[in-house]
Amino acid sequence: MQYHVNGFHPGDPDVLPAAPGHRRPGDPLPATVDVLIAGSGPAGLCLAAQLARVPQISTMLVEPKLGPMEKGQADGISVRSMEMFQAFGFAEKVMRESVWINETTFWSPGADAPLARVARVQDVPDGTSEMPHVLINQARVHDMFLDVMRRSPTRLEPDYGLKVADLVIDPTAAEYPVTVTLEHTAPGREGQTTKLRANYVIGCDGARSNVRSAIGGALHGDAAHHAWGVMDVLAVTDFPDWRMKSFVRSRDEGILMVLPREGGHLVRLYVELDRLGEHERAADRGMDAEDIIAKAQRIFSPFELDVKDVVWWSIYEIGHRLTDKFDDVPEDQVATRAPRVMLAGDACHTHSPKAGQGMNVSMGDTFNLGWKLISVLTGRTAPALLHSYSGERRAAAKGLVEFDHKWARVVGARAEDDATDGLPRVAREFINNLPFTCGLTVQYEPSALTGAHTHQYLATGFDIGKRFHSAPVVRLADAKPMHLGHCIEADARFRLFIFAPADDAGGQGRAVARLCDWLEHDPASPVRRHTLSGEDVDAVIDIRAVFQQGFRALDFGTMPTLLRPHVGRYGLCDYEKVFCADLKRGEDIFESRGIDRAAGCMLIVRPDQYVGHILPLHARDDLTEYFAAILRVRG
Image (cartoon, rainbow, N blue to C red; front, top):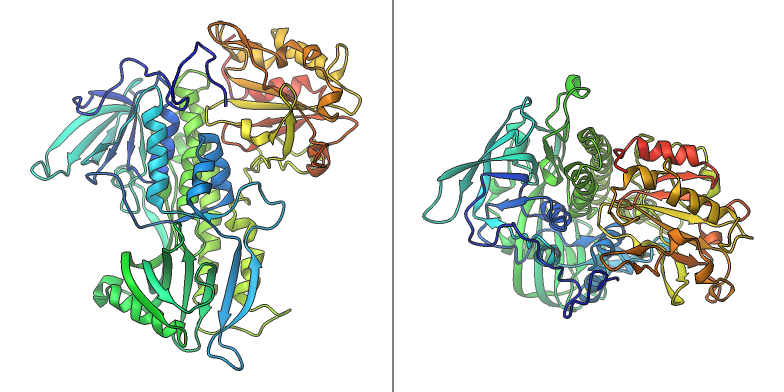
């Protein structure tokens, strides 16, 4: 973590200096705003936390509820989301508070017992990520995003008691083309409306999204016509795996899932209830928490379940739905119009909670969108970049809906098939699906943002189009062991990692030094072309190098000046750009990620932590072309 770059500031370094000109709680509603976010769920807050860091952008977040969430709803955080939380700076806090899911167990009727443990599986395979799979109250995730917002230069706070009732887009307007009707929901003000104009509106307002309706969107798909109950409980039981994630299938009463929660005592239960008629809703049955408890007790039998307190409960129906497009631009106008209204989270895709992906994919939506909005609004890229959001994230959501459709039926199957290799079907499918449930199967197709696989062989462990798979390194200047991916922050910057050839120690005339000299000084280099005069050299593209030698074999003082840049108001040296393999602990990033030792390579990582391209160290024209297709010339 770096601070004091522009002068000494005492106190909490996470609290950034406030920028003037932004609204404070209690201020009147604005007439215009750059970005209006509808809904303060995970998608809305993830986006707001990114925008709040940029003083040039005015953001407003409206939420019909009268205050922040306290309990209930989603709880599972995939390893991919934990990697994203690292970029926001609160992954360690989540790890400390949450319960880690290390093993998953499976229970079914046995030959000699009504219920027996029939399988157990390591929940996150070795080598998948440095991050764990955790469970934590969704409200705490909200709290952490809210903290990021409050500590950011704009001091952004949600406007509670307001919802988007309607909006109208004027495609011919150059500024603030979206006129939004906001409706008050607070007691005494219900139904009162006000209007403002926005450059962009992001609908994170759930499955019944008014934003989606306003742009003519609809969710398409099916329902499984099956009611499930979910409850967070404090209970006494003799079930042995009460603190394990567990699938429990009874002989005649259906299935439930046990999900231990943070704090050591709270547990969430997902309980199969009744099948529904073709046109029946779960609410028509009039079921409540007592029905969920009674069904759970029957499934657990002969184990006892004595529920002492129900902290939260809900009954829901499984549905798998997806909207046609995640923005407002008709397909026949893509070439002439850039998006002004976009959808995220449940507003554009819904699914069951069985795979624990809803909150994770929703945050993935706006982590993809956030850097693109920032780049457009700060002038770094053309507005057409926003077309890539719907293309990339709808494909990811479609994969989730298709997966969830199949997985929900495996979990809810009435009878288990015969075990194969000692594993029942649900356990086999669970193992096969682990990369998906870890959030690691999203792979963006080749585009302006994702290069061709021509040079994938140079770094076989960094899949082009997939998330950057971090690995241990040692920072040269202070010999600190760390993960390379942890230098990627949620700051809308691209990263260019230079992996050095085996005989290169950074000295003059070698490949790394020649490349760095070109990047720093040649007017044709992307650094010079896309960085404004007066900005720090790493303001748009953050360049770092990784060497194969141990840290004692390298000399920081002889590194290229691009890797020792002087930044900030005082021109202080940045000592955190150079890394080497962690030979002391035997964790060689070149070996673990399949990096060509003889040739080395360049690795471009997008601001959302996805690998954009892999290129040879000499491929300067290709590097220039990649960034030229995304960024405006500003040098």
